[in-house]
Length: 123
Image (cartoon, rainbow, N blue to C red; front, top):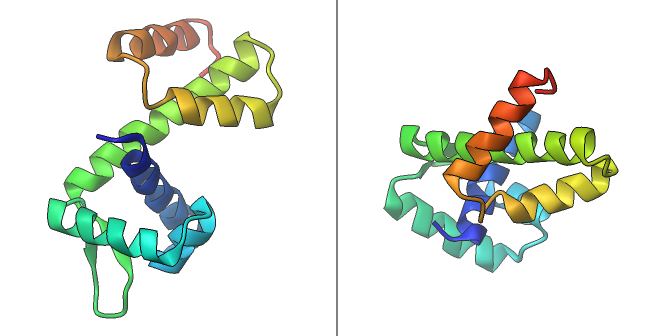
């Protein structure tokens, strides 16, 4: 899945946790994307089976969308912890770098980082 699409799913999950119900405008604000871009993406995700949209415009992740979003968000949290706790990077830098790296790291490298953090009581 493309990085921008992963960002959308992660944003929907985070917004759901933060505010409960998610609309396209909430995603646009969070990601600083245009309403038109978000509208287009919502259509793609809806057709792809990752989200549903109710009559009032509220967006929910399907089981498949939720699984993908949770996996992306786990990578984000784990990498942020790694950068802060092991590399000593400030939180805002760790967050930005985690957001970029979460999309390109191999499963093997991510699992190695996760195992290291777990074994050392960091995460």
